[in-house]
Length: 441
Image 1 (spheres, rainbow, N blue to C red):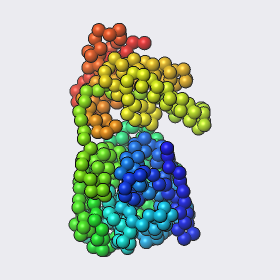
Image 2 (spheres, helix red, strand yellow; image 1 turned 45 degrees about the vertical axis):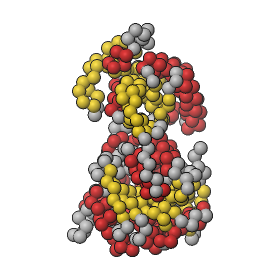
Image 3 (cartoon, helix red, strand yellow; image 1 turned 120 degrees about the horizontal axis):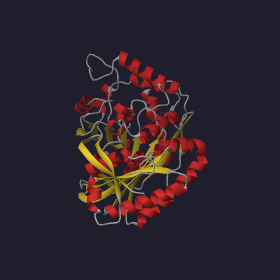
Image 4 (cartoon, rainbow, N blue to C red; image 1 turned 90 degrees about the vertical axis):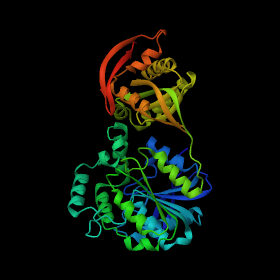
């Protein structure tokens, strides 16, 4: 269940926060830039990230003043004033000492708080963060004034769209569901005028002089290919915080919940709990099924929010029942569809057929992609080339089509399943050409 949004009083302002998880430590998670603690849970990727945080900590999750569910019209607060939001929320939940996890701009207020109130901070984690935003002769990793003005102009001109998702999270740049959620997340978080004000406010951040005063054990996390925040920013933080250790992770995504989020979560868990045991991963031959609802946005517009929500709930019940009936597993909800896995391809195909019939009775159409291959299984999640292939095969399917790889077709030889050729195709991000086949109706 999603946590309830509550409010803490910080002077004359109300700061929205949530508390979830039952781990042995309190972890306060400060997000960057524009945020909304309620709409964050609408993203299956972000919801999974938050849920996993709550498995090893009691998580305090909040919207900074000026954004999201917190009071909006706050002028141009200083870094000191923004750090007081942490004090207010900690007092509201009765927490005396926390591990601070600051992502991007959230790292600035966490660093200020850690330097000012070291007795209230057990650990400091800075992910994708920077001590200064503007370029300076002694800080070449900064952004020039021309670059920030161009970025703000682009932000205002394209407000309502998925702003710079191709650079903020390249791994999902082609994912329509992720782009739609990301665009809506900004709209729920701020108006375009407020977004401009917050961007200009962040551009003035420079807390380099505070870094030597941070004595709290600190973990600097960064992805090596981060396009929003260059890795040199992590180098600067680690070099100037005496108690810091630096971990550079593979990947290009700035947004922590995209890409391999388990790398980040693993590092944070080990750091704050002292648990060095790694989650065991295993490779396993599985049949992966991706299902996407066709025209979901148009359907939502036609039905309205309430009727669409009811339809989605019925769809979830039907899919879960069918998957269970074929001894499969629902890996995750993908925004407009599902990722499923099965021990064998025959049950995967039969289940996909039944789901297609169920959705048709609800007035929905779907497209489906299926591939069998070796997957890496970490906890409940799956990754690996086989997963990517199944997703790309789905992209080639039309409405009501179930498309499979040659591997799947070969493995079900002898069954009653009939196929028609879908041709040899290139799959985005996958080497070579792939012979694809459509399951006969």
